[in-house]
Picture 1 (cartoon, rainbow, N blue to C red):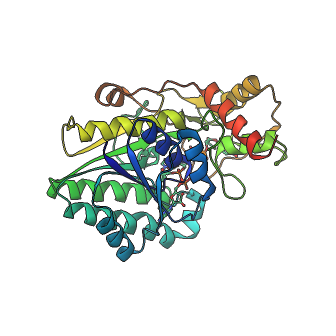
Picture 2 (cartoon, protein in one colour):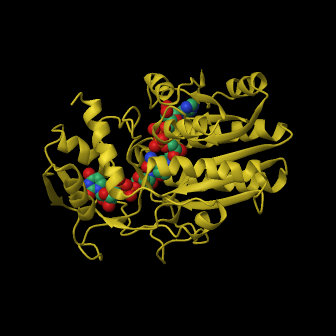
Length: 340
Ligand code: NAD
Ligand code: WQD
């Protein structure tokens, strides 16, 4: 089976994808600088899969280390590139950190792939590139909107860099996956999301509130033009999302791709409001969730959910797990993390 490099493979989505890759028989090499993850995740992955992936602690901003890495591992056929900084608010405070980490690392990896005879490259993009789409569900041909943050801008620039590189490099085939809102954890509760400090995202805030770490959830606005006034998102189970990477990788390895740069939305296709997520969490866990309505959060779009037609048809991939499955797995992970 081919050898696949997973950058950021000890992070939230990367760790779940490594599990799926190993279970599908791929040889996996993880590169991570541990800037937003812990080395313990490596053992936890091995516990699930019974196989330890190769691990290299490398900072992908170090061009010479990236070069040296690719010289040492010449058998790599595919790269799944998760490594990036991802906190929207922090990117406003530290734009240069985000531009350097998210853009320089991508360039150094693509420069190495240009030297190889052929390679397959999967990139972690985001629904954030669409901003508030004019039409919902949003499909892949919707235009980019002015980014709301340096983080969002890096994803737009990243996609342009990959498109332009593929345009002149027939030896690189690439797919950008535009994730909607990834949530949940592996059914083993051995791996999951590890937010740094106070969570900025809805589901980790919910689970930390339910476990008693936070007093109450602030719902950012109930005066949006939606049925219950709260914002709508497409929450996708991280295990379904991980499987989409396998589908995308196989498309490229089997040369089923239609062009050497393609883009796919990865979501469930179903929108849920913040209040619906709270209700679903309460129902599935039996936990009452204290919450209060507060003002809107700057930069939030009203509604975003995916048109998944292209991914369903071309990648032969479809989200299988429900919002309830995802919330229950997130809760089980939170409980395990806190020893409860
Ligand atoms: P994460 O922070 O959990 O994982 C990223 C991993 O990359 C971490 O383990 C971190 O230590 C590592 N990393 C960061 N910079 C690095 C560098 N310079 N060198 C080596 N390793 C480095 O994030 P995640 O939620 O798993 O997200 C993975 C990818 O998906 C990111 O590109 C993110 O922008 C994208 N994405 C995430 C979401 C989301 O809501 N989680 C949504 C859309 C897109
Ligand atoms: C979801 C909904 C909030 C927290 C972010 C990034 C996006 C992508 C995914 C990477 C919104 C509401 C949240 C809280 C709340 N990441 N909310 N109280 O903003 O859709 O997307 O993560 O690419 O780029 O922007 O996700 O989980 O922060 O918010 O009411 O304490 O929950 O207003 O409506 P978001 P989120």
